[in-house]
Length: 324
Image (cartoon, rainbow, N blue to C red):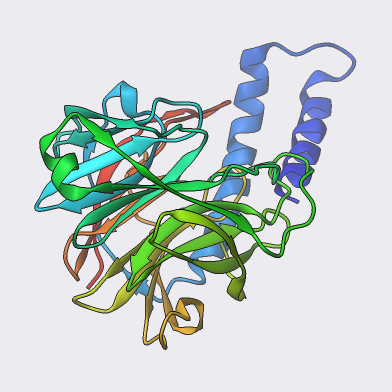
């Protein structure tokens, strides 16, 4: 619907400025930009109606250009690790709070088809190769590595947890039209949990998968219609809270942070969901793809770089957000 309305608006604007001739590029930009701005502001204003609590967001740093597609983040003993998504190397990067890469860690026996999130427990780190924009993948995997190796070595061995969705029988979709895409992974108890994003209905499905290497068919625990596409997740044991991040539209506007409390067992989507205020934010806080708790009261978040016509570039960046 967003694309349809925006395309219609652009077409009408072009008619208005061109008549029977062909307008120059600069004329098109000058004419369209205020109206598209107004359209996007209206979308974000509607998104703001869901907010129930405000949080201060600050940009800590721009990330190095090698991290333009940062899609997952974890914090281990005050050390930050991130990774890129589809088609990039099978590597994790240790970074500082100025966005600099301190170390590059090669993950052996792993392939980055579409790494979308990273999670951890006391002893292990789990990398989710779970991106599936076309719903056609039959090689979905989570790579398990030890924290000790990650903290001390630059080449680490990975074990594979491979899976398929038990409720999926169709493997052919148009791009970004499938219910079997996923970008969010967290660790809780003995299992890992995957949050999908149904590109058409907006429904999020929650799946559990054991942490033990092997091959599994996983069925959904629950579904919920959320007002955003989920792109990252984390769990904080100290507050017994889950955080989800994402955005409202297919063009990644309307950045959203949702805090979940008071859930029973692992039925996270049945818990109390608070949408944190994100309207007052730095420019680059747009296509947010990764989130991790920095203690019970703060989050660390990264965004991907995106280049939008008429608006320019939104850089990949690291942010801190106060939530309590």
